Image (cartoon, rainbow, N blue to C red; front, side):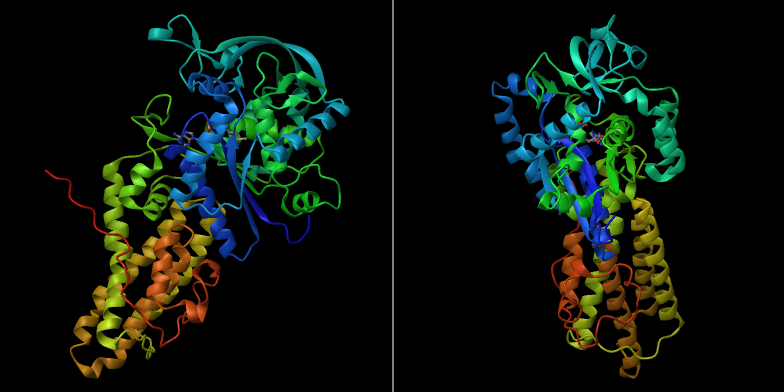
Amino acid sequence: MSSDKAFYLTTPIYYVNDAPHIGHAYTTTAGDVLTRWHRQRGERVWFLTGVDEHGQKVMRTAEANGVAPQEWADRLVETAWLPVLETIDAANDDFIRTTSDRHTERVQRFLQSLKDKGEIYEGKYDGPYCVACEEFKLPGDLLDGEGDYAGQKVCPIHGRPVEQVSETNWFFRLSAYAEKLLAHYDANPLAVQPQSAYNEVTSFLRGGLQDLSISRSSFDWGIPVPWDPSQVVYVWFDALLNYATAVGLGDEPGTPGAEQFAATWPADVHLVGKDILRFHAVIWPAMLMAAELPLPKQVFAHGWLLVGGEKMSKTKLTGIAPSQIIDTFGSDAFRYYFLRSITFGSDGSFSWEDMSARYTAELANGLGNLASRGAAMVGKYFDGVLPAPGEYAEAELSLQRHLSGTVDVADEAMLRLDFQSATGAVKSYVDAVNLYVTEQAPWALAKDPANGERLATVLYTICESLRAIAVLHHAVMPKATALIWEQLGAEPALGPIGVQSVLDAGRWGQLPAGATITKGAILFPRLEEPAS
Ligand code: MSP
């Protein structure tokens, strides 16, 4: 591995059968926050997201809408999947489409190389298939249908009947990899996280694996199998490869693709929802083993956003579009809320009441109020010029210690993808600074000119704390923290907010005395009371 290998993080590529809901935005948001954090640790980062365009699910949706699948996919990408990245403020480095030439050519080359190695053979598939999962199922995976589906076998995830597939296909020798994967996971316990996901994967592997059909012959919306154009590549085999095709998989040595691959692969984190864990922690690493390529360092499976106790989904008409929330709360609050309120790795329920309560308490009254009070008081008492602090008392020294602890906790939590603890640590620091403001009561100090030095120390402490808070919260709330940076007049001395080191955020005294402090826009406007 070259020493300047990027921290490489991927999201799943999303099916373009429909527009994104907040369940999809949740994964991308988490990826965006983590990659921003790693950038602010001074690392080179590569953040990939994209869309999964092939398969029966997309093909049938296009048919139902009376358009060709490519036209449907183009439309959804342009009108929904690219715009949602703006809506949630994601700073991805690349966006892969599985219908792009760079992807299809590399997939074909990869497949041919596995065929040449004897990893692929022709066989007959007879069994159930769930189009919503795009997955070959084992009879034991299925549930008995109820109501409209009584007497039929249904998919446990989608609750809808499976289809019977009987085709001559090309098979990948997946069964040969169960033991090797178990040995890999035994030696690398962090390769699948959280622990519940690790346990699920290893216990599944202990049951052994069957070979996998990796092509389909009954429809043509997919990448043609290079040696047998009557078949298209199975959509998951095609889709999983995106993580490697997007960074130059299999390109000739000396080409830009090969260089990018060397500087990026293997992925550090594949973020996935728990429903697609096995594809990523069983099939994908087996494909890589077969090709003798390095395995991703970690697959992290997060939980589902639930509505009424069930996975939010468009098929069940429970999908909420990100803009429905962001139009009211803004993208920062959206990002903050989902990472702060749900343990990453567990399911979580969304409710407007909970979102409003946290917004008001932690953002409007917490961080927003601190920022506006700090700026207003420097304006009022020092004409907007940050005073130099005098001697620090125990109250300030204690805040400084608290800050350096916060940096350690937040960084350690972020590296474990524990967004809740990371944001919680910064939030506790905000609370401590708000308490400090109340206790020191600068407005009371200002009444007596003899307290001038003490007042300067308190206001400097508030602004320097805001400097650190802006740096530590930037990955989660890029817009509000950029506004704080502006209010603090920090850029001339310290540079742009996006390049501030999180690891160095606790070093006290970075904001220079003399900085121009302005009272800017309100960061988190109060919510209007619903009309009664
Ligand atoms: N196309 C495949 C992934 C291929 S990756 C090589 C796919 N697409 S998907 O659009 O159905 O789902 C993409 C991701 O969104 C999955 O990680 C899934 O878990 C996540 N979510 C979909 N609904 C969700 C919730 N209600 N809550 C949280 N995440 C959810 O699967």
